[in-house]
Every structure is written in structure tokens, then in C-alpha cells.
Image 1: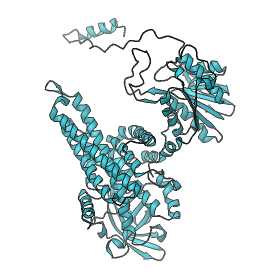
Image 2 (image 1 turned 135 degrees about the horizontal axis):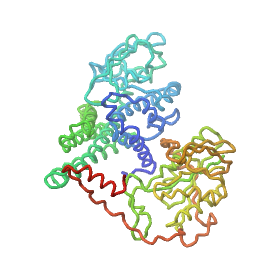
Image 3 (image 1 turned 120 degrees about the horizontal axis):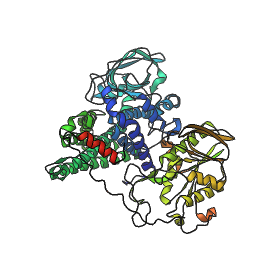
Length: 378
Length: 257
């Protein structure tokens, strides 16, 4: 049950080689210069990372969610920010591939799966975050077109992406009045806010997406009118475990660095690892990561099977793994003493990057709401 | 065109590699075993030609223990069309000469227009296997090429020698070895990894090849193996006004200047 197959081992080995060569040596520089490495993403695309759990018909890799969490953890060991963007991109491609018709899939999936074109997911608004069903961006039907007006907030990849999957209000009926519409980057009326200054995730742009009388053909609608909220929520199940996996990868690197540091650092007549108080910290960090990973793999397997408790398990796993990842990264800084606070040692970047995983893809408070409602049957 | 790429499983160079002090053989359990990077470059050269020229067939071939299958799987996942694994208990401890003899028999049996390999493995570092294989087969060898160009009748390329560059070419069939300056190896993609299992991988014994082993795998005998002595602390020079002279004397005494 917990043994990786030969194929999975080979995939993990490949992703590790790629991440060690293409991501790890550049992660600190990209963070410092706020560089979004679209060329490296395109390289990841040639390896199949743009459509990891997307069907093979239009260029996806056809892997499972259980494979995907292994892949994201491995990418995040080198750079949580890039791993997380690849997760967001995969979520967009999955929505188009799962809910689009054959023409839409044939048109968009090949270029997205190869990562020649990037995708952005536009759900959150300045006034609608956790309460996503309250979103206000409007799409009004006008003949064969929709006219979109509104503002989307905290959009990853905005300004660099070629396609924007925008959740819009087509009727004033709460969550049942939301529709998913694909907006190509070059559409007149589409513009972007400034690149937000933020604590971490600096290697991917975060901007507002501004829609002013943006006209797109009705053919750009995914699924039926009013079906958008269901699409958004289904996509997020996968997004949540991916983000959990990204936290585990960052946390694992922080732990590995801490073990190496404590074995090397001499104080009070020997290496610090001989101090039992510190060794116990290492034990707790390892236990937290392994516990979270175990739950995450279970959630991924449930999603692969379409199990009835998959939504609950994905929410639990997201909460536990993102809390574990940040907590481990934060303690790893402490174990490194003053060096943990220096950028050069790479610990503070991991903590800054992982902090937002507790907030996004459904905040960890919303995860508790999902779990609680599921348990209480409410 | 059929290109055979010789590949090899070696201990990971990221870790310290060990010889077993009793048997004198490589301690394969001491390290993670990986595909030798130099042969992946050889494979990349072959795959690039295949990608640009329909009708090209690329075969990965290794002589090694059962665990070496992993290296062939990786070659298949990178894009090789099929693989050949020569595995036989009689080959344990095979030295360069014995290995080259088996490799020559294996490529001859498989049939080829071109054999490409790395110029020197990262573990044995003999650097003579390609030449020995060529000698066994009576074919031309282009050794240590940095660049390589394959046409239907010829193979050509550039090699660095002490005094400059050599531009060389040979009629096919031929044997070529490449250096670390040749093509950067690709990563296998997910599809390649998943389809590797469905590609043909033949396992052959010495008997299958008609090679009669003589005296185990090796033609030479290892008399003793000793561990590299642990590094000792260097000499410290404290500057009491004569440090420059002391340093110069040390360098002269060590024949470093």
C-alpha cells in the first residue's frame, strides 16, 4: 500500500534529477529577483509536467493523483514556488480537459499540457475569498458572446499566462449562478494589476486580473451556465493535495538541512545533534512530515478511486500537510540559530514560501469547515 | 540504420565508492547504482539522430549483473527502441579485456551500423573498452569525439588532442566513443517511463553468445587491495616573519613549483 511502484520510483528519480539541475541552483536567485522562469516551465512541459493527471488524448501524461503528489513533493524540495505554480497550471488544464467539449480540449489542452502556454485560475476577488460563492464578476450574454466585467484578486501567473479560467456570475442565484469561462490573454479589455509585493512565492507573479467589457465567444464557456462552482470545487480537491505535497517537499528539505547542520555544528564539546532536546525536535519534525504524507497519500488514493469521502480526506490532508510543512520549516530556522535567518542558508525562503499554503486553495479554516460539515452531515 | 549504444551501471559518483577489501571487487552494495552519465550522452547523440532520421533504430546494450536492468530501463525510457542485457554469473569480476570480448560478441550478434559509447566509465576509468571492441570486430574506431555527425555511409566528428583538434571520419560500420563535451542527455519524460516496460529487453547468457569463458571473467589477477589512507592534517605555517619563505620551501620540497 505504501510501497512505490517501479514506475513511480522512476518518475520520482527523473523529477528529482530535473529539479536538482533546473530548479534548485536558481531558486534563491529567482526569489530575490522575482523572476518567473517560463523557459524552465516549458522544459518541465516537455517532460510531461504540464498535464500530469490529464488524459493522454490531447497531450496529458495520464498519471494518477497518487503519482502527482509524489511529483509535486519532489519539485518542491527544490523550489516550493515553482512546484506550486505547476500545481495551479495543472488544475486549470484538468478543468478544461475534464469539463470542456472535444473542440475546446483539442484547441487548448495540447499547448497547455506542453506548457508552451500557461494557465491562470481566476476565482478569488477583492471582496470574495473564502466565500467564493459570493463572487461578483459578471458575464452577460450578448448574442454569441459573453461580456465580462469585474476584478479577480491574487491571481498566480497573471500577466504571463496565455489563458485565464475565469469564474463569473451569470445569474443572481448564489453558487448556482456561477459559470466557468476561458479568456485568452490577448482579448481586448483584459488587463493586469501590479505584481504584488509579498512575503514569499516571489518566483511567480501574483496580480489582479481586470476585466473591462471583455468579449469572448460563448464557445469559450466550460460546461453549462451555472456549472462553474461545481467545476471550481472539484478542481480544488486536486489542488489541495498538490499544495499539501508542495508543503511536504519544502518541509523535507528544511528537515534534511537541519539534520546535516546539527551533525556538523560543534558546541558545548560536541556536535549539536548530541543534545537530546534538539534530537527530539528532529524526531517530532520527521513524525509530523511522515504522518502528513501518510494522510496525503490516502487522500490522493481516495481521489483516484472517486471515493465518497475524497473531499473530506483532501481537505484534512491539505490542512495537516500545509501546517506540518510550515511548522517544520519554522523550527528548522530555529535549529540553525542566526544562520537560519540569513537568506544564504535557504531556510527562511522555505518558511516564507510555505506560509501561504496555509492560506490559499481554501484556507485551513475552510478545510475545517469542509471536514466538520462532512462529519456532522450538515 | 541501427545504432547500438553501450551503457553501464556504475556507483553514484556523488558518494564515496568502495572496493571490497577481501574480494578486491567493487562493493556494489555500498552505493546507489546509477546509469553512467557518459553513456547517457552517447545515447543522446544516437537519439538525436533517430529523432531527425526516420528508420533509425537505437538499441541499448549492457554487460552487467541483474541489477543493471535498471540502466537499460532508463535508456528505454529516454527513447531507445530496445535493449540487450548480457548477464551471466561467470562474468563476476570480469575485467576490461573480458568485458570487451563479450561486448564485441553481443553487438556482432545483434547486428549494427554504428556502435556509440562513452570514452571512459566513471568507475573503472580504463578508457580502452571502445578500442578493444573495435579491435575484436576489426572495425574503425573514432575515439573521444566532442561532436558527431552521422550520414548513411559515414560517421564523422571532432576530437580534442594535445596539440589541437582532429576532424575525423570513418565508413560505417564503425565504433565511436564520445566525451563529456558531447550532447547533454535528456531527461526521460513521464510517457517514456511508462512505455519503457512495453519495449523489448532481451537477456542473453554467455552461452547464448557463444562466448567460452576462460578462468572466470578476468584475464588478470588482483593480488592485493588496500584502502586509501585517511587524510592527515596538513602542515600549519605560523607567520613569525618567515612565513613566505617557509611556504616557498614547502612548495619546493613537495615539487609543486
